[in-house]
Image (cartoon, rainbow, N blue to C red; front, side, top):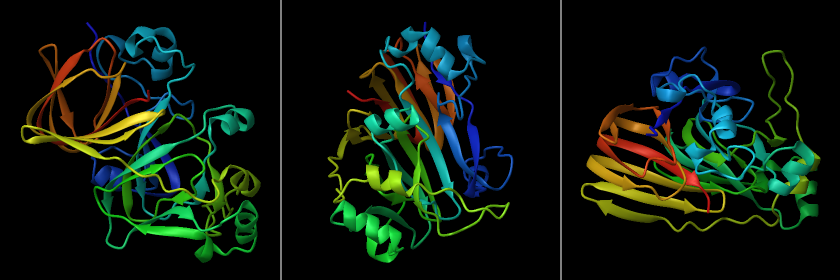
Length: 316
């Protein structure tokens, strides 16, 4: 019998990070500049380790290589998804990510399409999401001249908002925002602008201007979301995205809700509340910040309690 695999968080210190992964999620973070919890990851820059069951102590990248049956015998060479919780105590750099073709050619890894669920946002918080350049030549000129107010598109955000950020999208998460990010398993980021700020050693961070100009979608495109909601008793299942990269859902559970397998495996992270996951009669506690993978051998399961979960599956 396969069972859900609960994963230990991997914390990443960032110049823009803070302490809310401790105060909001109860994580034991090492300092007050932690920007990211890599909740489910097989990326070499931060690999998740299983905390329970038969595979306790095993790394997710090892399981992907050695136990394909857990994931429905996939053909991809690497685990394709990466789930993060981000705490933006300060603005992130203005950045853009490559697609798979550019990423593999220039960085030796997947490109990075991602999406954001806004867990929380301070009043007045905003993101950068897109740009106003009409041609690549105009984009290069505006970047060179530092015309950031003319170039960058700012969007106000609030708790519960959802954004799809395909590769090629210029973007930045603003200060005062916490998000759950579902993305391809890539750590390639091209910085366009970093506010001329300096790190603890007095150094500015590297920019990647030519790569950014190369990979940015021009003119910018704003994806149209086809969000769907299905009620299950008092619970609600929202489908935010169904793409070639990932399918992303919000499970807002009130009471007891049953699920049937729809994909080779399912990833889930609790963003609010508490409850239980029940698989084959065995109960696993769920609390805020808990992340797990429901493997291929589990065909149905139940979630009970009062909690909100962001779940995802590999794309079709």
